[in-house]
Image (cartoon, rainbow, N blue to C red; front, side, top):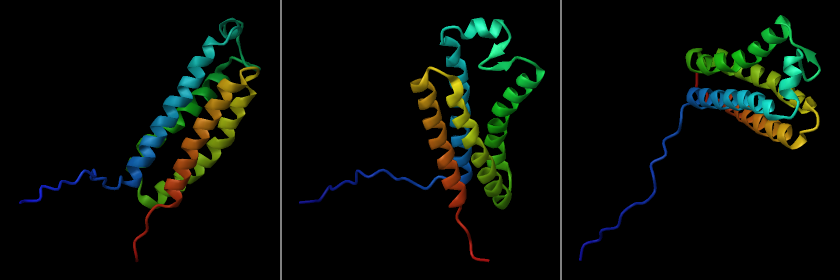
Amino acid sequence: MTSTETTTALHDPPMPVRSRLAATWASFMFFYVYVDHLHLYKPGAIEDILAGVVFEFDISQTFAFTSLALVGIPALMVVLSTALPARANRTLNLVVASLYIPVSVFNLSGGSWLWFYGLGVVVEVILLAYILRSAWAWPRTAS
């Protein structure tokens, strides 16, 4: 009698830190943009935009520039996470993710839709925490 025992465990090779960081920044960026996009479904949002206001901010070139920068930085982090040398990569990911936590929490100022903005903040902060953990625990080699 021959044993035909098979292994059902899947091979799960470790994912490189750079890939994890890039993928998480991409997820963060998409979610960040979708929160802003879905905000348009909030009653009165379109009327406010047509009147030149988003939340409490007047729509101006400064507002548009700041908004674009807030989305552009995570987009750059996707590329930089794959292109920079390890030391600079780790440092930049730690700094940028740390700075984006208060930016994400600021979205709670969205007003009456606390569940919507609350979920947005929770997911964004979880993604940023994963970036921080991945960058902090970057494997080291003996010199």
